[in-house]
Length: 183
Image (tube, rainbow, N blue to C red):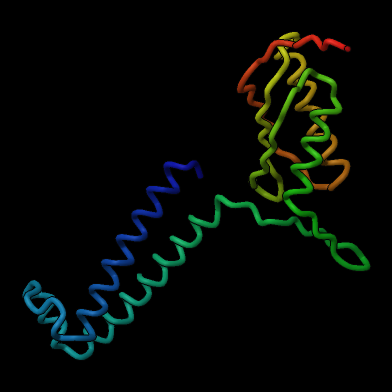
Protein backbone atom coordinates (compact mmCIF):
# COMPACT_ATOMS: atom_id res chain seq x y z
CA UNK A 1 0.00 0.00 0.00
CA UNK A 2 1.28 3.45 -0.76
CA UNK A 3 1.27 6.19 1.87
CA UNK A 4 -1.90 7.93 0.65
CA UNK A 5 -3.96 4.73 0.70
CA UNK A 6 -2.68 3.82 4.16
CA UNK A 7 -3.48 7.28 5.57
CA UNK A 8 -6.96 7.20 4.01
CA UNK A 9 -7.53 3.71 5.39
CA UNK A 10 -6.39 4.78 8.88
CA UNK A 11 -8.73 7.79 8.85
CA UNK A 12 -11.65 5.68 7.59
CA UNK A 13 -11.16 2.97 10.17
CA UNK A 14 -10.76 5.56 12.94
CA UNK A 15 -14.10 7.17 12.06
CA UNK A 16 -15.79 3.79 11.72
CA UNK A 17 -14.42 2.82 15.13
CA UNK A 18 -15.77 6.01 16.72
CA UNK A 19 -19.11 5.54 14.95
CA UNK A 20 -19.29 1.93 16.13
CA UNK A 21 -18.40 2.92 19.69
CA UNK A 22 -21.11 5.61 19.75
CA UNK A 23 -23.76 3.19 18.49
CA UNK A 24 -22.56 0.53 20.91
CA UNK A 25 -22.84 2.93 23.83
CA UNK A 26 -26.24 4.03 22.58
CA UNK A 27 -27.44 0.42 22.62
CA UNK A 28 -26.10 -0.15 26.14
CA UNK A 29 -27.12 3.11 27.80
CA UNK A 30 -30.42 4.99 27.29
CA UNK A 31 -28.98 8.38 28.31
CA UNK A 32 -26.49 8.55 25.45
CA UNK A 33 -27.95 10.11 22.35
CA UNK A 34 -31.53 9.83 23.58
CA UNK A 35 -32.92 11.83 20.68
CA UNK A 36 -31.88 9.46 17.89
CA UNK A 37 -34.02 8.52 14.95
CA UNK A 38 -37.30 6.73 15.70
CA UNK A 39 -36.12 3.54 14.03
CA UNK A 40 -33.06 3.33 16.26
CA UNK A 41 -35.19 3.91 19.36
CA UNK A 42 -37.60 1.21 18.23
CA UNK A 43 -34.73 -1.24 17.72
CA UNK A 44 -33.36 -0.33 21.16
CA UNK A 45 -36.64 -1.21 22.85
CA UNK A 46 -36.84 -4.66 21.28
CA UNK A 47 -34.71 -7.06 23.36
CA UNK A 48 -33.79 -9.39 20.49
CA UNK A 49 -32.86 -6.48 18.22
CA UNK A 50 -30.84 -4.93 21.04
CA UNK A 51 -28.71 -8.07 21.46
CA UNK A 52 -28.24 -8.41 17.70
CA UNK A 53 -27.25 -4.73 17.43
CA UNK A 54 -24.78 -4.99 20.32
CA UNK A 55 -23.13 -8.07 18.80
CA UNK A 56 -23.09 -6.48 15.34
CA UNK A 57 -21.49 -3.24 16.52
CA UNK A 58 -18.97 -5.11 18.66
CA UNK A 59 -17.90 -7.05 15.58
CA UNK A 60 -17.71 -3.86 13.50
CA UNK A 61 -15.66 -2.17 16.25
CA UNK A 62 -13.22 -5.08 16.50
CA UNK A 63 -12.84 -5.27 12.70
CA UNK A 64 -12.21 -1.53 12.43
CA UNK A 65 -9.63 -1.58 15.21
CA UNK A 66 -7.92 -4.59 13.61
CA UNK A 67 -7.89 -2.82 10.25
CA UNK A 68 -6.43 0.32 11.81
CA UNK A 69 -3.68 -1.63 13.58
CA UNK A 70 -2.93 -3.59 10.39
CA UNK A 71 -2.66 -0.47 8.25
CA UNK A 72 -0.32 1.19 10.75
CA UNK A 73 1.88 -1.88 11.13
CA UNK A 74 1.90 -2.95 7.46
CA UNK A 75 4.21 -0.10 6.49
CA UNK A 76 6.85 -1.10 8.98
CA UNK A 77 9.33 -3.86 8.55
CA UNK A 78 9.80 -6.15 11.48
CA UNK A 79 12.98 -5.08 13.18
CA UNK A 80 14.48 -8.47 12.36
CA UNK A 81 14.22 -11.21 9.77
CA UNK A 82 14.20 -14.71 11.23
CA UNK A 83 15.58 -17.68 9.35
CA UNK A 84 15.19 -21.20 10.70
CA UNK A 85 17.83 -23.90 10.42
CA UNK A 86 18.06 -27.48 11.60
CA UNK A 87 19.71 -26.51 14.87
CA UNK A 88 17.90 -23.24 15.64
CA UNK A 89 16.97 -19.87 14.26
CA UNK A 90 18.97 -16.94 12.90
CA UNK A 91 17.77 -13.44 13.70
CA UNK A 92 19.02 -10.87 11.17
CA UNK A 93 18.30 -7.29 12.23
CA UNK A 94 17.21 -4.59 9.78
CA UNK A 95 20.20 -2.51 10.89
CA UNK A 96 22.49 -5.34 9.77
CA UNK A 97 20.82 -5.46 6.35
CA UNK A 98 21.16 -1.68 6.02
CA UNK A 99 24.85 -1.94 6.97
CA UNK A 100 25.41 -4.58 4.31
CA UNK A 101 23.78 -2.28 1.74
CA UNK A 102 25.96 0.66 2.80
CA UNK A 103 29.16 -1.40 2.75
CA UNK A 104 28.27 -2.76 -0.69
CA UNK A 105 27.63 0.72 -2.04
CA UNK A 106 30.86 2.16 -0.67
CA UNK A 107 33.06 -0.77 -1.73
CA UNK A 108 31.67 -0.68 -5.28
CA UNK A 109 34.02 2.30 -5.89
CA UNK A 110 31.42 4.21 -7.86
CA UNK A 111 32.07 7.73 -6.58
CA UNK A 112 29.73 7.69 -3.59
CA UNK A 113 30.70 10.30 -1.03
CA UNK A 114 27.99 9.53 1.55
CA UNK A 115 24.99 7.23 1.62
CA UNK A 116 22.08 6.22 3.83
CA UNK A 117 20.21 2.94 3.41
CA UNK A 118 16.65 2.04 4.38
CA UNK A 119 14.99 -1.36 4.15
CA UNK A 120 11.25 -1.83 3.55
CA UNK A 121 9.07 -4.94 3.28
CA UNK A 122 7.94 -6.17 -0.11
CA UNK A 123 5.49 -8.80 -1.26
CA UNK A 124 6.22 -12.28 -0.03
CA UNK A 125 9.35 -12.61 2.06
CA UNK A 126 11.29 -10.12 -0.05
CA UNK A 127 12.61 -6.70 0.89
CA UNK A 128 13.10 -3.37 -0.89
CA UNK A 129 16.25 -1.34 -0.33
CA UNK A 130 16.39 2.42 -0.77
CA UNK A 131 19.79 4.09 -0.92
CA UNK A 132 20.05 7.91 -0.67
CA UNK A 133 23.44 9.07 -1.93
CA UNK A 134 25.67 12.09 -2.39
CA UNK A 135 28.07 11.60 -5.30
CA UNK A 136 31.27 13.16 -6.48
CA UNK A 137 30.99 15.17 -9.70
CA UNK A 138 33.23 12.92 -11.80
CA UNK A 139 30.75 10.01 -11.77
CA UNK A 140 28.82 8.67 -14.73
CA UNK A 141 25.58 8.44 -12.74
CA UNK A 142 23.38 5.93 -14.67
CA UNK A 143 26.10 3.35 -15.27
CA UNK A 144 27.66 3.56 -11.82
CA UNK A 145 24.35 3.51 -9.95
CA UNK A 146 23.25 0.44 -11.93
CA UNK A 147 26.48 -1.21 -10.75
CA UNK A 148 25.68 -0.19 -7.16
CA UNK A 149 22.14 -1.59 -7.42
CA UNK A 150 23.43 -4.92 -8.70
CA UNK A 151 26.13 -5.12 -6.02
CA UNK A 152 23.70 -4.33 -3.16
CA UNK A 153 21.18 -6.91 -4.37
CA UNK A 154 23.81 -9.64 -4.74
CA UNK A 155 25.53 -8.91 -1.42
CA UNK A 156 22.33 -8.84 0.65
CA UNK A 157 21.08 -12.05 -0.92
CA UNK A 158 24.48 -13.74 -0.53
CA UNK A 159 25.14 -12.70 3.07
CA UNK A 160 21.62 -12.98 4.51
CA UNK A 161 19.72 -15.34 2.23
CA UNK A 162 16.87 -12.81 2.07
CA UNK A 163 15.63 -12.15 -1.48
CA UNK A 164 15.70 -8.51 -2.60
CA UNK A 165 12.79 -7.41 -4.78
CA UNK A 166 14.05 -3.94 -5.64
CA UNK A 167 16.98 -1.62 -5.01
CA UNK A 168 16.21 2.05 -5.49
CA UNK A 169 19.13 4.49 -5.60
CA UNK A 170 18.39 8.19 -5.17
CA UNK A 171 21.08 10.74 -5.91
CA UNK A 172 20.30 13.78 -3.78
CA UNK A 173 23.38 15.84 -4.55
CA UNK A 174 26.53 15.89 -6.65
CA UNK A 175 29.52 17.58 -5.06
CA UNK A 176 32.76 18.62 -6.73
CA UNK A 177 35.86 16.61 -6.10
CA UNK A 178 38.07 18.73 -3.89
CA UNK A 179 41.80 18.48 -4.33
CA UNK A 180 43.78 17.77 -1.20
CA UNK A 181 46.70 19.99 -0.44
CA UNK A 182 49.46 18.17 1.39
CA UNK A 183 51.69 20.19 3.69
